[in-house]
Image (cartoon, rainbow, N blue to C red; front, top):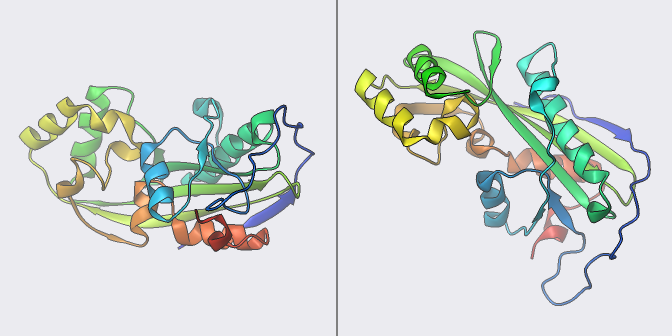
Length: 225
């Protein structure tokens, strides 16, 4: 499921210092910028025929808050997209920002701070279900508008043993992903199933992105390379 998208005007972006890339065979109609360092999000976009540039926002996620995990995910996505959209390098571009949190017992869980926290997370999650909330924000610097929404996917966790949890935490992977798990890595065998968009759990919902682009009068097919 997705939250009701919100759309609002933006102040004009700073002018680019070096202009936009030239056109040519195979060039999409618009520049697309991903405001995220996530290799998983970049991979999802590339698999869908898109070729975004990556500009990391540098937003301090710990300084932002919201009443619910779903709203927090959207606030974080909006902050990342807005920060990058304000840079001269992103002038005239479409900027996509995303952020994910796992909702468990009504609390938002991002990346664990250390191995001890990751271990505690998995012992609390096993045999239970949580909701992966991923906020999405698209900023159109050319039109001066933006729109945002959150996609929600229910995740049913298996029951890994203490030894399996210890081995997974020792791999280091859970320290780098929201909720201390991912479907495209070593924790995949510990997830029994999901209800909703698979890509959303990895970090970006392509159906929601398509819908948000359409709200800004941009067809995702125009961004194919």
